Length: 360
Image (cartoon, rainbow, N blue to C red; front, side, top):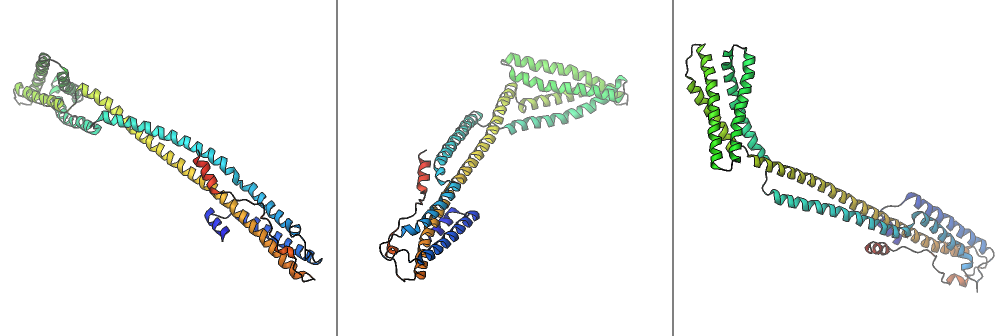
């Protein structure tokens, strides 16, 4: 039952190893029967005063030799220094991974503190909303101006190109003015920006209004240019207010750019931290598997030791019973009651392997 428990603990039984043990068992048991019959024909061992080990040492040597051959394959003793080397290497790599993880987590912690409530999506949404509203206004302005520029006598395509250039320029100016206003540090500068922007827009819109009125007059539609100037100023002011309240200022854009780069670094580090943790988990898993393999090797060696010790005593029992059955004198040698030493087959204790690891 003892060797069975060892096999279960080891987790597997090597078929080649088991076959070698069974072959050795059959050979030694047959040797015990043959020798018992051989010596029985001479009424040996002698009924009184003989030494049993003189007849059975070959079984003992055979078991010890076969066990030594198996150990040469399993090398259970090599697990002790190898286990310490592997454990030291594992701890070194694990500590390095832990240090990298800790460093990156601390960097992310500091960046999260600096970023505070930074929301890259919210900032982008502001720009997107302003862009969509501006595009709608700009599209209507382009189409309306294109017709007006046809009074120059050019075709519609040429008028459309001029209209796009003019409208885009106006709306860029409408967004640029609030940027300049936000960056101005004094009230006077802000007033100069407001009045100069309105004055420049008024001159431009007056010219556009004249083009539109002239175009409409060719179709017998008479509308005063002042109405077009008011409409254009309205859209200009709407665009400017939209830029002022929705779009960020220059310093906000710069700050956002810095925070965005910092935010991307945080995301990259989070990915790297996950990869490092996965590598650490894989390292630990491999270390556990290697330790299990070493423990299994020791258990297997102990299983073999138990099998060969048991085989030795089985061979002795076979020798005695066969010798008694085949003796002509029907005597029982007194040496059969002698206590023989155990074969020189030692087990490897698992706690040695564990203590070796703990010492590291």
